[in-house]
Structure formats: structure tokens, C-alpha cells
Length: 278
Picture 1: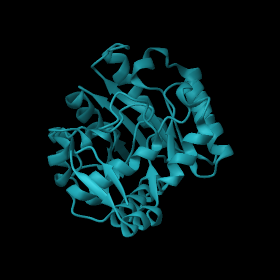
Picture 2 (picture 1 turned 90 degrees about the vertical axis):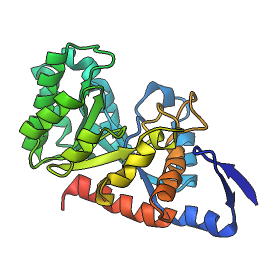
Picture 3 (picture 1 turned 90 degrees about the horizontal axis):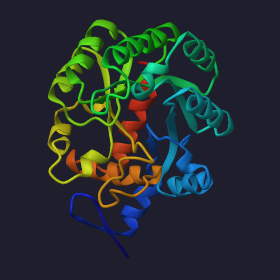
Picture 4 (picture 1 turned 135 degrees about the horizontal axis):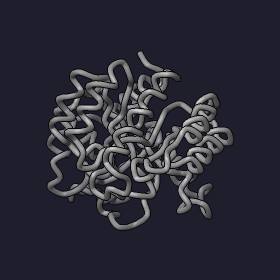
């Protein structure tokens, strides 16, 4: 019998029943950068470990044009890898008509199911904020033209993000990736078709998301790792991997008083609605 330690400081004793539940549960990592240089040398092993942990499908977002092409290529090679294409707000200053034309072409490929990662990042400000806002709006327009959902990045930009979404995103399906628990974005979900990407934050000690996740509609919850970033506790500081979505799922299931299988079924259904609509 194995003893497994999880992020919230508790201990789970893995019996035959819980081990079987893990294998029966199909989990989806809805935000994982398999196109990152950090996975170049061992991607096959990373995917093998993920599948052994019950993670069977993956959404790989681009963050610039080369990585968007890489995500699309992965989706062609692996039927359980889906791609999103877009430009991260860090690189919004580099976005131009040629970039948008290339993204338009990628969105015609069958494995590409979303626009993103796009949004606003006011923590680093690698691109001017007015440029970030303009490029974010262009991504939303791109998604509307192609009837695709949007993967949204937000860091310390809640007010401007909410303003743009309220004015530009009606009728679009959006996931707030790496959701941190901002109350104004929880309230916005009642007005828009928002999903919330629940990742490593929910495992961090004293993080507000652990409490606020109960305020989110269960029909809006998605699981993600943001690998190779944002490892859940107790792996913080190490390269993250999609296999660790299981740790996140177990913590979220505990907070919501659900079994792992129930949560897996719920989040799989939610992902299908995010990608395809109701």
C-alpha cells in the first residue's frame, strides 16, 4: 500500500479502490505547453507518465507564432493533443497583420480547437498595456470569425480584462487560464460564458482559490497544469508535467466533496462544451 502526500498538507492512503479510481478516471490537462523547449528531449516520456496518471487528453496553447505552429503540429501527430493558437500578451508588441494571417491559416487545421493564449499581463509589462489591450481585442475578433473558444491569460489586470470581456466577448466561450480567484471575475462569469482553469494555485497553502473555488459554477470548471510552469505543492520550483493534473484534481475533488471519478466526468463534459459549445 502506497502513501501519497498531497499539496494541502494531508495524506492519502492509496488502497486498491483508490488506485482503481485513478485508472478509471480520464483527466484532461486543458493548458499544457507541450510545445515548450523544456519538453524537447523527453516529450514521449512526459506523455507516458501523464497517461499512467489517468491524463488522456491535452490542450496545448501557443504563445507566439512559432509555438502556435508547434502546437498545431503536435495536434496532427497525436490525436489526443488539441491545439490553441495565439500570441501571449508578453509578445503583443510583435503582433501584426502577417501574424494574424498566419493564425487564420492555423485555425483551419482540424486539430486546432481554440484561440490563445492571449490576454493581459500587467505584472511584467513586456509589451505596452495599450498594445496588449489592442491585440487582445484582435484575438477576440479572430475567435468570433472562426467560431472558436478563447484561452485567456490574466495577471494583475482584472479591471481592464473585465471591461474588454464585457464589451467584446458576448457570445464567445472563454477560459480564464490559471484562475487565481479574483472576485470580480467570478461575478463576471454570471454574465458571460466563462470557464475557469483550475491549476496549481488550488494546492498552495492559504491561497484564496481554495476557498473561492466553491463559489464557481461546477459546470465552468476545467483542470490544467500550465506545465512546465506552476507546479503544484509539494513540487513547487520544479518543472511541472501534465501528470500532476491528478494532484490538482484530487485536491479540487476534496474541496468540492466529490470523488475523483465524478470530477473527471464533470471536467471532461465541461471541456467538450468549451471546445464545441452547448
